[in-house]
Length: 380
Image (cartoon, rainbow, N blue to C red; front, side, top):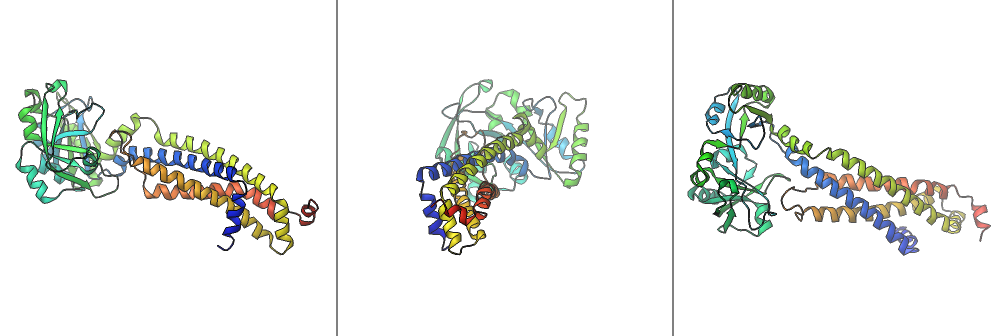
C-alpha cells in the first residue's frame, strides 16, 4: 500500500490516456454485465424451476386451451400430489406497451403450488373475501406505483369483448429467492369465469402438477400424456425447467451469443490495454532503470507495472459492472424480461477484469523487470 501514491502518480502522468483506457474497460464490462443480465433473465425460470413441478399444456401449442375437466383426472394419476391451473387474461393497462402477466387462478391451489411466493396473511384473507380482488407482485407494484387498495382498470382483449375490467389490489406478494418472478397479477378464477364469455368457462390455459417424488417426474409426465392420448385435446407434459427452457430456445442460443461477443470484446481490450501499458513502460524506461540502480529489484519493478495495469482493470471493470447492474434494475424491457445480475456474475466479472489486467500488463512488466540498467541509463 505504501507504493500506491507512486502507482497513482504514474497513471496521472498521461491523464487522457489513462481515462480512455479505464473507459475502455468500463464499456467492455458494462456490455459483459448487460449480456449477463439478459442471460440470467432468460435462464431464471429454468434455474428457479421447482424440481417437483410439471407443466401440462395442449400438445398443439401453449395458446390452445385444455378442458377444465382434466383437473380431476390429473389428480388421479399415480404419483401426482397436487394440481393447479391458470388461464391467461391478456388485459391492457393504459397502454399496450405496459405488458405484464395476468392470469386467473384458484387462489388456494396456486398458493400451495408456489410456496416460494409469500403473502401477508391479512392481505390473503382480503384477497379471498372479494371477488374483484387481485394479488400483484412486488416488482409489478413498484413499476406502476400501485399499493394495496388501489383500483386497477384493464381493457380485456378483443376475443373477450374488449370491455374494461376493474380490479382492486388486496395484496402484494414477494419472492423468497433472488430472481423470483414478482411481475404477475393473479385474478380470482371464479370472478374471471363469471364475466368471461361462455367459451372460457370450460377451459384453462395450462395446468401445473406437483409430483410426490422428483425422481419420477419424467415417468409421471409420460403417464399424464398417455392418459389424454387420442383425446380431442392431447397434452404435452414437461418438467417446469424444460418448459422454461423452451422459451429460451425460441430466442436462440443466448449463451453462445454472450460468449462470442464477450470473447471478441475482451480480446480487443487485451490488445488495447497491452499496447497502452507497453507505451507507458517505454516512456518510463529511464525512471524504471533508476529504480533498479538504487536498489529496487526486478520483481519489484514487475509488480509495480502489473499493479498499474490491475488498478486500471479493476476501476474500469467495477464502473462498468456497477452501471450494468443499475440499468438491469430499471426494468428497461417494460416487464417483457426480468433482467437480473446476481452476485456470482459480478464476482466473475471482477475476476475476468483482474485476469485481463494481468495478461495485458504481463509482457510490458516482464520487459521492465529484464531492463538492462546500464543500457537504459545511457539515454539520460
